[in-house]
Image (cartoon, rainbow, N blue to C red; front, side, top):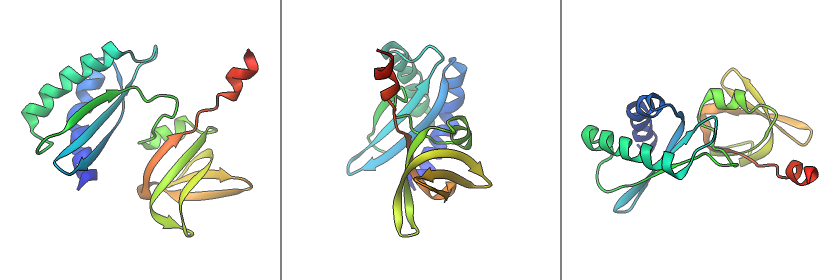
Length: 159
């Protein structure tokens, strides 16, 4: 149910956010007792400021009120993706190929729900992750959460 609501939210809000000149990264919808958390991730070539988040928040609040997609109380957050950027789409898995990722599965794969390694891209409907000396083919549809793992070591090496 939460996934279906998140999909409806994305369908309604992505055109609004992209029409404002921002990249729609994705949405997390987390129902909780008595309320819900609705987190929208946006990006821009020059980065995202607090003012950008406030502007988008104001715009999408109006759409959410009119469309009435989220039933009951909810808290809206608009955020930049940050250094540990979440991955939502096939394009994200292709775009960030070669970077380190952490994946959490909805169901165990080979007895595991968590994978961490270097993203190797997509093959059919599987995300390929190199973990030590083995490549795992993780079904995209079963990924519950995926994030980049920031590498700050390159920043320290330059200083």
